[in-house]
Length: 238
Image (cartoon, rainbow, N blue to C red; front, side, top):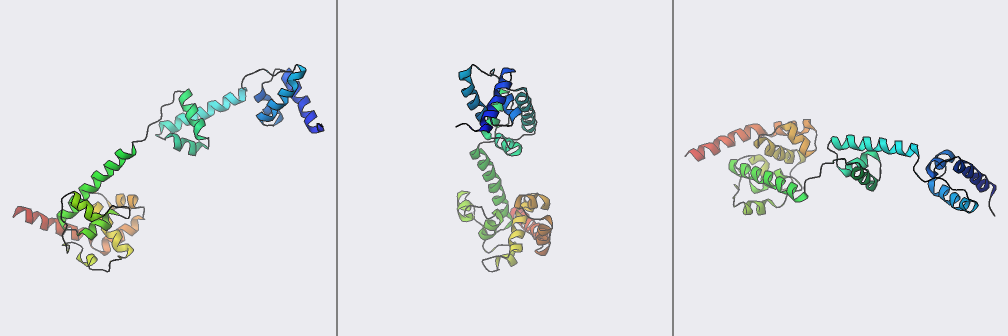
């Protein structure tokens, strides 16, 4: 048995189809899903009532808005994944609109290439730390929690770290588990040694700038690095 509600809806769909409305336009007018409308039209087809094929103007306008928004985000350097997250559109739909409208989206750098660039930066920093007298333990802490084993990195670079260290001796004589402030001081020292700012250190380490400055001041990081650099220069001169 067909309910009165379904019968009334099909009557409405039939009237709209006879007026030349497309399935999408009928769905918008009746506030039903497109699947429901297609089902009703399949039923009405037996009575000679057929809706013209095509997409609704409102759907085209909506797609135009989506394309414009995607193009704007792409021009800002957003990736396909980031565009999908920002717009709330399905990833596959974003890819389809990008491809069908010829939108240029920057390709992310290959993962291996990015990892290689990070390794180069770390190797340069390790050489600088060895030069001014960091210990292997200090180098390991300075590289951060996600570091690979500092001893292996030193061996791979054919470097030997000072032990005991000639810089941050007070830090190196602490118990094996350093305080958070002490560890932060060593990580910030790596940035300062490479000519970066405390602001850059705070951004990369994901900690407040005030905390970085406080750790640098508490352990006299700048003064210790300056003295160590002086000793390193004297040793090279001799």
